[in-house]
Image (cartoon, rainbow, N blue to C red):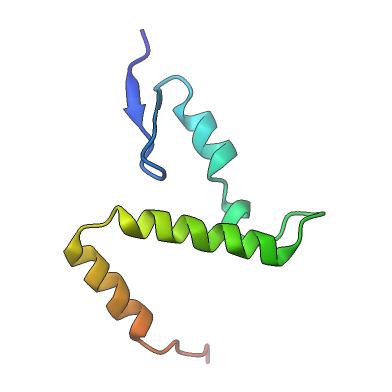
Length: 79
């Protein structure tokens, strides 16, 4: 019998039988990486930022500090 398991991306409970499908459909790379055909890229970016904020809120204080430090570091341009 399938057991309830927590999605490591959104934290919601799902049947172990359906978790991989949920992750593929709800948290696919194209949702954050770029604009799928027919969608406005600004809408996709807004969705991506909302998801990042949701995930950030679930982090421990130590990991939040690490993320802030990484974000404060200037990006290096590829050589």
